[in-house]
Structures are given as C-alpha cells and as structure tokens.
Length: 163
Image (cartoon, rainbow, N blue to C red; front, side, top):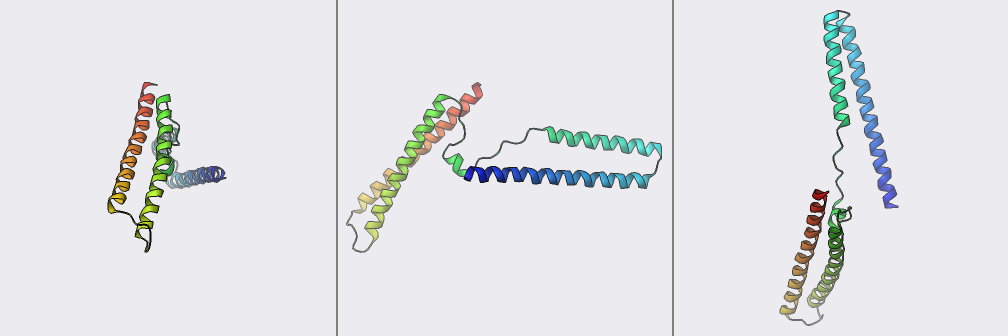
C-alpha cells in the first residue's frame, strides 16, 4: 500500500512537472510571437531572431536530453541498505548488517529497560558498573554494525567499478 502511494505521488509529480514545462513553452511562444509582431517583417532582424529562437530550442532540447540525476533514496532506505547492491560480497555484507542491526536494536531495548528499572523508584537494584558495561556493549556493537554497513557499501562500490 505504501509502495502504491509512493508510485502515485511520483506519477503525479512527473505529470505536474510536464504540465509546468508545457505551460512555460506556451508562454515562451506567446512572447516570441509578440516580439515578432513588434519587429515587423524586416528580413535582417527576422533572420537574427529565427537563429536566436533556434539556438534557444536546441539548448532546451539538450537540457531535456541530459540524463536525470539519480533519485535519492529516503534516509531509512539508505540506513537499511534496501537499494540494490552489486556483487555477492556486498549482498552477504548487507545480510550480516541486517542481522547485526536487529541484534543492536534488541540490545538497546534491553539496556533501556534495565536503565529505566534502575532509575524508577523502588525498582531493580543494580550497580553503576552494570549499567555502564551494558552501555559500552551497546556502543561497541553499534560501531561494529556501522562497520558492517560501511563494508557492504565499499563492496558494492568496488563491484560497480569492476563492471
């Protein structure tokens, strides 16, 4: 359902962009015709104006033919490495990253639960060392997870370069 909404928004955006471009072209042609009427039929100025108009159209066509920029993925999709990766090593690294990311989230939830229980009045008795060691484990695992993500992106870049 979310994918359908995203596609529909994308189609609507492209339609609005095309409509705006068409409106700008019509506006340009109207102004051009107005200038032609103002200049009259003098052949020298008409030829210069025709050449200028042709240059404008050529430059507009060149801009239209340039390849569109690569669409930026959302932050969540970039964080989770949902984009297609090239190379089997990058795909294996992505799988390892997903597993490590899931474990990191579980560790974080357990650490927060322990910290909240410790801070709550009448809650669980814990030593500060236990809380700090849990926090250090979470931070260390977060660094490890970030390293896996970086490794997957590096392997993807290398596979794309070798293609």
